[in-house]
Image (cartoon, rainbow, N blue to C red):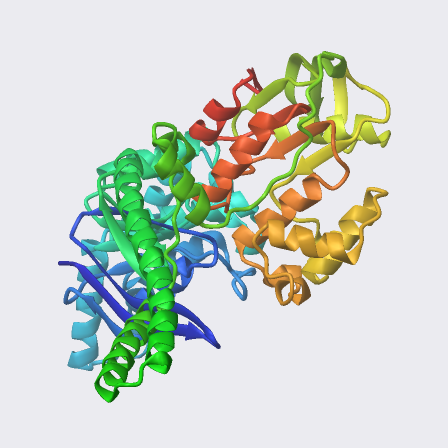
Length: 551
């Protein structure tokens, strides 16, 4: 065994995050870690790495095992050169490099320091660090990241580029265990293919937090964090769906039996109490009192049990019988409620017309792009990061809003219907909202789109998107998790009842039930959709015409 996790209790204030959470990872094993947003997946990584020690339990690693972990945030590292940052996080590099660069100046004739210096030179060679820069540049080529980025600082990189840097660091660490948090968010399909190739071929164990179903399809097992515990599923995502369905059905049946038993016990308590009060014989009174106490004791135990979280993917519910389907609908876990326009229309009016468009800045990013998007239509923009997909989207929005282009139009034209309501799901939240509370940000989004919103409607939206209407509305947007920010983006996108949706990687940060709810809502949506996604499952669900940009 490489890693054993036994966390008996972990809390934040009054909220219990884990309660008897246990799992293990074997050498070389590829493990997907999933769970609803807010279930503590990233916190679990911090516990494993030792950054968080405020818990009850034990983390056991094999002796001398090397653990490498990706970072989600880079606060305080913005001015660090990229290559230096990668080197500094590699096992033993900083210590060995310090000895090699400083000892020659002061070791003199000290035999001890000379031996340390010689050992450092030998260990540096064993770890292959003399060839390190060449290897990092080769990884840049595999991810098709310009190696000139290595000369920039961390703060000069985009979110997607930082993620690639983290992956290159992990891959070059050659650790026994790699902890990777949402590796494919913001990745294009080339980088994603390169990551999956490494993931499936590497000899090291990998524990990866992800809801990317393309990645989950490659794992050896899945660990789901649910109800404060870890549930283990052997096999990949497809196996997980089948096993999860079987287990959840069994749990629902058990829960139904428990609920019926609770109802019967409540009736028994009332009945025994009445019979005890009516009885005159002391022996009979004592018998009914004992029966009442036994029923009350069992009732207390059963009522103290928390309701489990039930979720079965939509496809797996299709062949359930009516009784099971009814029980699942009654007891399933709450999910986000994405309300889109579902009024059917026979109109096929032209909303967006792009003809032989060539856009860019100092030079064209792409040329000769042509497509038409009609009401009810679906178009997927496909291409590498940097190929110009977002540039094209911004140009379409400029045409809708009647504003000037931020890029240069080298050829072609973009025409849109006048007074077109457009909803945009973008990868990054506009900075103007980040310091507002969640409730204030929702009000501001509606106001910016000329929409009135009442306090009651704000509370309803918070509830629909699984926020606590009482407490979460007062939290600054900047302090929300990635999944929570993604849910805010959905609220913002739909604020003006749009006739066309523009989606830029909408499944990033969302958990599996939320992704499925979004997919279903978009399938029912009768407006037009223009989307960018490297999630093959999501693209298959939405369908439509694929327009390739920059190739």
